[in-house]
Structure formats: structure tokens, C-alpha cells
Amino acid sequence: MPPPASLRELSVTQRHVVLASFLGWTLDAFDFFLLVFVLGDIARDFDVRKTAVTFGILLTLAARPVGALLFGRLADRFGRRPVLMLDVLLFSALELACAFAPSLAVLLVLRFVFGIAMGGEWGIGASLALESVPTESRGLVSGLLQSGYPCGYFLAAIAYWVVFDALGLGWRAMFVAGALPALLVMYIRARVPESPTWQAGRADRRRRRVRESMRGHWRRLLYMMLLMAAFNMFSHGSQDMYPTLLKSQLHLQTGTVTVLSMLLNAGAIVGGLTFGAWSERIGRRRAMITAALLALPCIPLWAYGGSLLLLGLGAFMIQVMVQGAWGVVPAYLNELSPDDVRGTLPGFAYQLGNLLAASTATLQSWLADRHGGDYALVMASWMGAVALLLALLAWLGPEVRGVGFGKARS
Image (cartoon, rainbow, N blue to C red; front, top):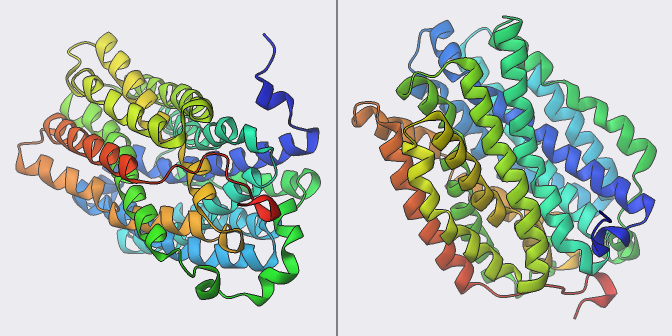
């Protein structure tokens, strides 16, 4: 089967840029989700409750806006490519450091600093890729980039199965494996050029400050932040505590948990690619709204499947919709952003939304404890409410599909 027309239009160099940005987000997510699979094991090792360990998730998410602002401003000033390489090296080194944490307190500090590094990757990678491809390819490239997130979760599930279960090396070895993304820097250095849009406006951009570049756009930042809060409650609400639901409430074995997690992320990849490409035809807002509303009938299967077959189907289908909506996000946020702050604004808005949603896993864990460990009830209720909120916010937003970048921007 020949590739879609939008992919055929990409040059070899553009494909390298897209691949590097995709791998950056994949490996960033891989490092983030390693913690999700070993929450209970860390809690036992440090003799604390699982809820205390979930603060590592909260702190990582809360720190990401700092990284988005810091690394985003560096990328707007010095270029996407060199700052992306620095960022990948930093989050890989910090992940490795987590393997040697002597206490929960030290681990939580490391997860916070890791969150700063993680916060820089998405915005820089997305702007680098979307500024480098033709306008008509943005929808598909957006879905491909966002599919890196479930791919990272998928790889984390494999690492959990192999490193933790099959080899029996324990949770610390999982974080040692998390240092592997540093190798991506060599590929970026060898194959990936700087964004042509950034190069074209380089001289002007260095003289302009954020406040000047954002003049007239502050309400848009507020909207983007609220939209991203709903998006992050949507994705983290369906993913972060899912292995805990399977292990603690359904008492499934490691291999079964891994397979269901793989199905969940396979659905996420299908959804991101499908809805991202579809948004090029029907518009960004309509694609996001459709995916959010279609998640509602998937919730009962995902949380209360009743058999492994139905649980697997539910896990697959809900992530088709969750990450289907997310597949539109890279293109939508970059098209909403002024040229001068595109390295900063999409990632900063995204991570500010993450900050508002950072307590998702901790709240779900706390609510489940209050309801006798019923994670299914808590997570299903959460997802239903957030899906409706997301659809409403997407409906209220502007449609900006195909807006020009650089000199072509209208």
C-alpha cells in the first residue's frame, strides 16, 4: 500500500526531523512511565503507602512547566536543535540517578528535577517537526508525534516484563534502563537540521521579549492552558493508575498486566495516527470533540470488562479515543502560537495544563482508598466527567487548521 500523500511530500531530511522528534517524545514518556509500573515495589522497599510514592508522579508533572518555559525560551533564542539535544541528555542522566536513590525523599526530589527536563522536550520537538514539514502534512505528523507518548508507555511495559519480571532485577534496574534515550543525541547531531522557520526569523527573534511577542495573545494562552489541563486529566486519568487497578483490585499477574498495557498503548497509537490525519480533513476542533465523546461508551469495558478479552478490548478502544484526541494537540497548539514564541508557548501551555492536572494519580489513589480500594469506580467516574469537559472546551476554542508559519502566517 503506498503511503498517504502527505507522507510522500516529506523529503528525506524532513523525515529525519520527524523521526527524531517522535523518538524524543517516545523515550521521554518511556522514562516517565517506568515509575508507574513499580509504585508498589518502591512503596514496599521504603516502607510507605503507595499514595506517598504517587507524589513522584505529581512532582514530575508539576515541574514540567518550569522546564517548558526554561528550555522553550532557550530554543526560541538559540535554536530548536541544540536545546533539544541538551534536554535529552539531562532527562536521561536524571532518570539514571533515580536508580541510586537511598530514600523516598531523594527519589521524589530527583523526580521533580526530572520533570523540569521532561517539560522541555515536547514543545521543542513539536515545533522543530511542525515548522519543518509542509502545511498539509501537519495533521498526520501531529498524530505521529503524539503517538510517541503511548509508544513510550509500551516500551516501559516491555521493560517491566523483561527487566523486572523475567530477569528479576528489581525496580532500580528499571531506572538504569531509562538512561538509554541519551543515545538519541547522536542521531540528532548527525541527521537533524535546524528549523527553517526559526532560521528565517533568527535576527528579529533575538531582539524581542516574551511580553512583546505575546501582546494580544494572553487570552489564547489561558485557553490553551485550560484545554491542556482537561487533556492531561484525560490521559493521566486513564493511564497512570491503570497498572495499579489491574494488580491491586483485579489481582492480575505481571505478564497479564503487561499484555493489557500493551493493548492499551496499541490503541493509543492507532488513535493518534487516525484522528491526527483525520483532523486535516474535518478540522482540529471537530476531531478532538469526536474522540472525546466516543471515549464515553468505552469506559465500562475498560474499567469493568469482566473477562480478560473484554478488558483488553476496553483498554484498546478507550486509548484509541483518548490518544485520538491527543493526536491533534501538537498541530493545534503550534498553529495557535505566534512565530516568535512557538518554541516556548505550546510546551509552556501544555505543561501549565499538566500542572493543573498533576494531582490526578494522587487524587485517584486517595479516592480509591476512601472507597475500599475500588479503583474501577473512581477511574470510570473520573474519565466520564473529564471527557465531557474536554469536548466542551474544544467546542469553545478557535479553529486554526492550516494557518501559515513564518512569513506565510496570515
